[in-house]
Image (cartoon, rainbow, N blue to C red; front, side):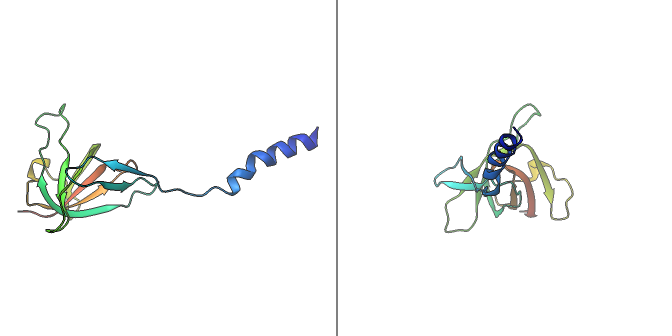
Length: 126
C-alpha cells in the first residue's frame, strides 16, 4: 500500500518539475493597428508616447474612454484599454487629475497582468 501511495505522489509531482512560465498575450482594443500587451505575471511593462485622444469619465460611475497614444510621429496611434483602478501620477509620484491628461501630453503607461493600463505617469505636460 505504501508503494502505491508513494508512486501516486511522485506521478502527481512530476509534471511540476517540467513546468515553464509562458508569456500569454492578449489583443488590446485599437484604432488602426494591432498592439499586443504582455500579460505575464510580472507587472513591469511600460509604453511611452504622446496622447492623441483621451476623455476621462465625467462622473465617478462613468468609466473613462480608452487612452490613445502615439509612440513616435511615423507610427499610427494605438488605443489602450484602461483597468478598473488607474492611477494618474506625475514624474515624482504625486497624484494628478485625469482631466489634466490632454492630447499632446507625453505619458508613460504601466500595464497590469491582463494587459490593461494600470498607471499613467505624466512625463511632460502641454
